[in-house]
Length: 278
Image 1: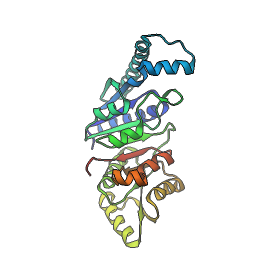
Image 2 (image 1 turned 90 degrees about the vertical axis):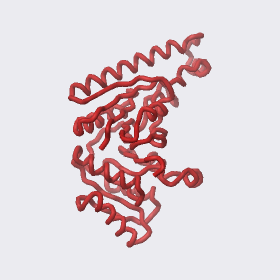
Image 3 (image 1 turned 180 degrees about the vertical axis):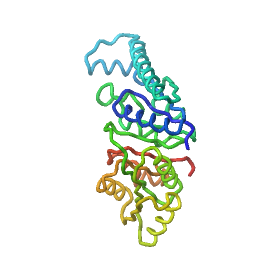
Image 4 (image 1 turned 45 degrees about the vertical axis):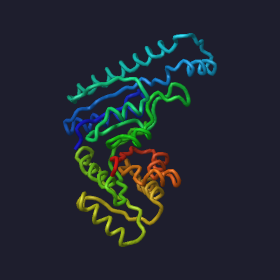
């Protein structure tokens, strides 16, 4: 299914949850799990640190960026060492990467089309408003492969929802949900925002082609993002799988993105499938 799992590490509770799930999936399918820690180069800009010193009241001195870099490298070394030790104890094929750059850009660069990225939905903050980790939404928007985002709250995946709109990326989300059912043994529910009964029947038939009869289908009339969020909350879903950013940049600019709405209105694990040019 996947050749590798890439985990964005920053020490936040959400990234720890992502790591646990990455180990679970990696062990089940016997595939490598790669932990990546990115030293955020923005935090070593001396003009930024000068402004920050006036806000927080610490003493600024020329060359302070070198000390900040040393601190971040030490933090990264510890996180990566812990990641590798825990993975190897579980008998998982693990490797680690530490790089410097913009976190979300470096995570995306590390990934190939055949990979799965797993990342905390909200990263660790150095201070309020200053992210140390990459932004999960930017990763999902630019990655060449599916992205599994996790909130800090850890929970079992017993009931999952697949949002299906008839497009290729959402069909692939169903295929991934089917494969991961081997790992989690969850119940699969498919929801589709439809215009009429005929469309609902066609979407249900397409869902059965992938999942067979071992699923529940719901065709609901309404605005897609509202249908998806409302269904997940009402039915108590534990995770959502869906195609991501599939309407094109022009529509997204003027009307907004279904994916963005879902990310900001559901506090659930989200598996987003966006293969470029599909």
